[in-house]
Image 1: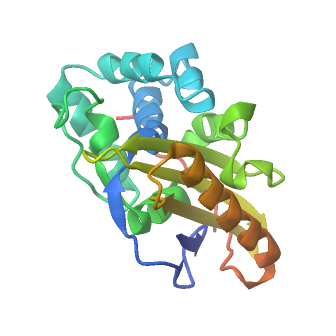
Image 2: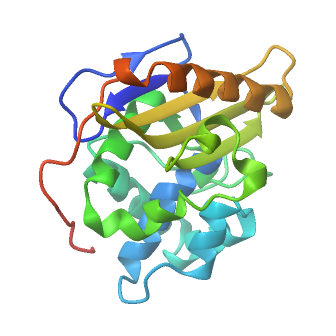
Length: 226
């Protein structure tokens, strides 16, 4: 788990040894931002909403395809991550054919926190981030019960069948807003146990809000679509 102040400033706080792995559905946030940039006048589409609030894979594929051919789509999502100061390589083709290419992006906890800290402070991203506050009930594990939290989960099996379960979030703390990136690979390898671990981590965070690095955006900003 890694937590950092929105807007930067104080160093992030790291807990645990796990650092990076497949993004799974957490990548649907920058994917949807890329889609919004492509057609800003259209605003948030039904596909973007379903991709974030329901983690609907078919809807996410629709957003991906709207960005252009796979190599162009990958570059569009990479541009969002680069603008956040946290560049990562988004596969254009599927490394594992049964899963989406974008979901198999290797995305570190540190870069997720950087991304959230930037995304929260760019007003152009607000329509997408607001959807993170509308995630449906069956996916509100982890930090989903925390008041006004913006969340997006992701999960998928490794080649050995064990599930990696991830969640990114922006939460409110006494010091301001905090970006959170959590991940778990339970010993059992089950999805249910993975969400249980993240819910326990979320409970710990709730008990230590005053100790977390928090911050705020220094000034309203907007990245022009491109």
